Image 1: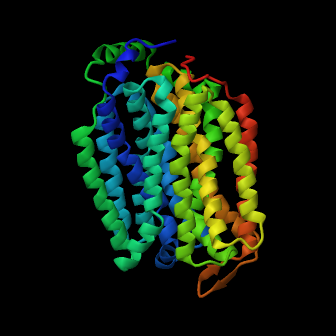
Image 2: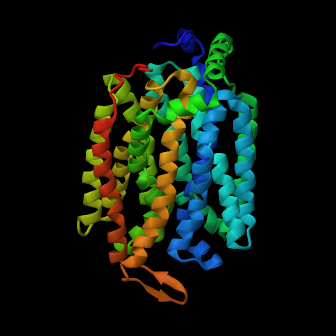
Image 3: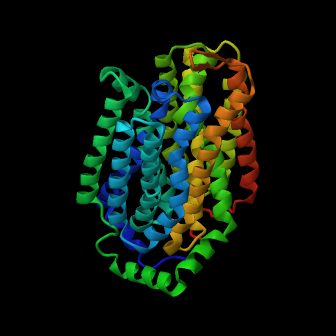
Length: 430
C-alpha cells in the first residue's frame, strides 16, 4: 500500500540528509558509550575489583535499560515529536556518562550505565522514524546503512583513539569525562538542525495521527507484536550483531592478546578495522539490496560468509598481525547484512507503525546483548583453564576458544531464520 504524499520526499534531499545525519550523531555518541569498555576493561576490573563475569554484568546494565525502554520509546516516537524525544534522550545519556565517570563504587557506575542505556533506546528508532518521513522507501536501505555508519564511527572512536586518550590523560575517568562533554555539543546540534518532517508534509502528519488515534495504543502494539516478520527480522539482526557486542564492545582486544599473543595496541588495530568493515559494509549491503531489489538474498549471503570467516579467525594456526586485521575487517563487512532487516520490517508494516515495529527488532538485539556479554564471561569461567594472580583472573586460549563458539553457532541459526523472512522486493507490503 503506497502512502499519500510520498513523492514529496524527493524535494528536500539536502535538508533531508542534514537532518538525518545530525539525528544520527546521537547514535554515534551512544556507540562510543557502548564500546568504550573494550579500551578500559582492565583498569575498570582493577578499580572496582571485578571478575570477567561481573565486568560483563556492569557493561550489560546498558542493555537491561535499553531492552526495558525500547518498546515504550517506539510507541512514543510514533506519537510525539521525534526532535523533543531525541533531545530528552541525549540529556539523559550525557548525565549518565558523567555519573559513570565520577562513580566511586560499582553500584553508582552501574546506575550511570543504566541511564546511558535508557537514553540509547531512542537513538536508532528516532533515526529510522525520521528517515521514513524524509526519504522514499526505495532509498531506505541505503539511508539505514548510512545511519549505521555513524554508529560504527562511534564504535571506531571507542577503540584505538579512546585507548590513546586514556593514556594521554592518564586514566579512564578523565577520558570518560571528555567523552561525556561531547554529549552537550550533540544536544545543541540536534536542537538547531533536526526537524520532525519535511516542511510540506503537514497533511501526511495529520493522516498518520488519525490512523494512530483510530487504532489506539494497545491495538498498535498488538499489530506490531503479532507480526511474526518483526520478530524474525529482529532475531536475524541480533545474531548477526553479536561480533559488535562480543568483539567490538568487550572481549575483542583481550581475546587477541591472549590467543594470538599480540600487544594491546596491535589488538586495538584489529577491533578498529572491525568497525571500519561495518562502516564499509552497511551502506554497501544497503546499496546492493536497493539495486537488485531484494532483501533476503543478501541476508543469506552475509550469514554464510560470516560463518566461513569466523572459522578462519578461530582455527587457522599462526596468523600474522596483517591477517588478523584483515579478518576483523572482513567480519565487520559481512556481518553488516544485519542492516537489511530494518528496511524489511519497515516495508512489512504500515508507515504509521514504523517505530513500534522496528523497536521489536531493537529489543531482540538488546536482549542478545545483555544475555551474551555475561554469558561469554560465564563460559570462560566454566572452562577452568584460567588462574588467579593477585586477585586478577588470567585467562588462557582454552577459555576463549570455548566462549568464541557462540558466534559460529549464532550465524548458523541466523541462516535458518532467513527461511522465515518474507521477501519485500524493496516495496511497501503493508
